[in-house]
Length: 161
Length: 260
Ligand SMILES: Cc1cc2nc3c(=O)[nH]c(=O)nc-3n(C[C@H](O)[C@H](O)[C@H](O)COP(=O)(O)OP(=O)(O)OC[C@H]3O[C@@H](n4cnc5c(N)ncnc54)[C@H](O)[C@@H]3O)c2cc1C
Ligand code: FES
Ligand code: FES
Image (cartoon, rainbow over all chains, first blue to last red; front, side):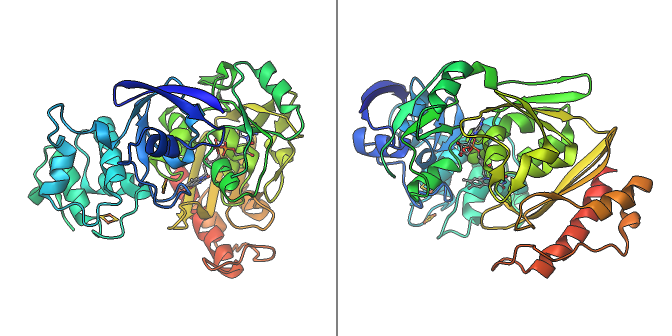
């Protein structure tokens, strides 16, 4: 076992992990931040997407020890300080961008990463960017609309499909 | 996943030493290795993370050569502007989250028969530099998941001569986003190169007939009537050898057109 320390959603945390402990496992089991979902556990589905040092990663495809000293943001860090939904989260609710909600934490984290890089993405850019985030329920249209709305664009005008 | 020790050397020398130990394996972005470990297809005793080694980082262009540190992520390569065809290829790998972790060194060491970077290295006539020596791309790819790397040898950087014209066109396998077939063409001081990934049972290869045709006339029309052989091509649920052979012809034309 080894000691690992990092900052998660602004808080300094540390814990004992094995070499093989995945970052997703550390977040969910050690820190009990179960908002990060594990769908496929093979790096395909994106449900476990979080941000490490400002960029999106699949937390099932990274070891906890690789995040030593890192700044980590999970879905639990996306709400406003008063506990109300953040802009992207609210847009997902407003546009019915989720059904079962399993993929949603990863979708929101992917959307946040996209909007940081590209504040006004087109519909096509959103769809391309979400290639690593799978949703079994929504058919993606409402997710795309939610992200257009979260970026402050006119959904009726920008959404063609 | 089997248990293993985890080491984080901060210099290349330390990493070389750590990898010299019995049962040690390098970990770069983990985007291939971690799924492999989960499937118990590898059981290293020690994983040696290359992430903290400054010597493996950085991208620079000088004298017509782009030098890419082995630990450069696909996102970082996508962001360089000196070699646009290579940036385009990197931007097309997997998805944004995979690109933020996966590295060029990991991709070339792994030599997946459907990976993108092997086509760029072979198709540009790149040099793969390790802690011990320099290996020409023509000598580096030795078969399916096989390379000229020795046990414990670490790729430190990859040097790409920047060609006058180049392009990579990939026909994506839609579920994995790897190349069902991908073709990298270039025309530079070393002549014309056509490298094909995703298609052959033996991994990435150069399509010599197309190179010969393009050497005298670098245009899609020069490829008219030329077809790749389906012998030894991959056949799976995604496509037969004949289908892949057809794609090689189509994608090579498209790549030549894209290279301009
Ligand atoms: C969902 C998904 C989609 C993908 N899509 C594509 C795609 O479209 N095209 C594509 O080409 N790839 C794709 N990949 C693979 C991806 O590009 C990997 O990042 C890459 O193949 C391996 O790089 P890595 O840095 O993650 O290496 P790791 O997984 O860490 O290591 C891979 C192997 O290389 C060895 N190694 C790593 N670095 C070095 C080094 N410097 N010297 C010597 N040996 C080393 C390791 O020991 C290991 O054996 C995809 C992966 C995923 C999960
Ligand atoms: S759980 Fe990590 S990608 Fe599916
Ligand atoms: S809402 Fe159910 S998987 Fe996306």
